[in-house]
Length: 162
Image: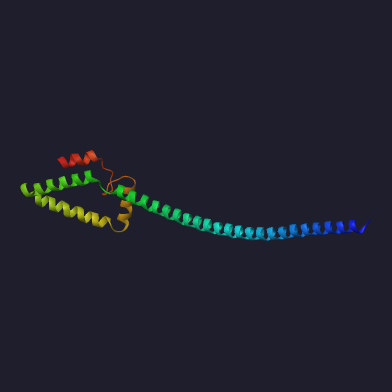
């Protein structure tokens, strides 16, 4: 081999090494950029997971609050259903007006009415205390009336008409 061939081979080797160094530098640079991008993506993923976790916690708390509110509303609706409605209140007002009218116009009815009213108030007051109140609650829960007996509504109306 001649010097020309050696020079040519040296130039080829130098150019090849230069190309290899350039490719290696580009690879190092790209790897550095990729590592930075992976780190940014991991940070972004971590942030997103924290936000999702906070959102899930908030939803869980809100769901629990809504369940509690729903239960409270259900109890309130049951209580409202137990209260007398408009028709019952109207009937009570009509009966009250009729009783007052009888008190004013019928002689002797007033005294009998006042006595019966006082007696009924005393009985209810006694039944609100102690063992009587307990038994009254048991009887009422089974569908009886406040006096302790099971009286048919038609029988009460017939007695009231007499």
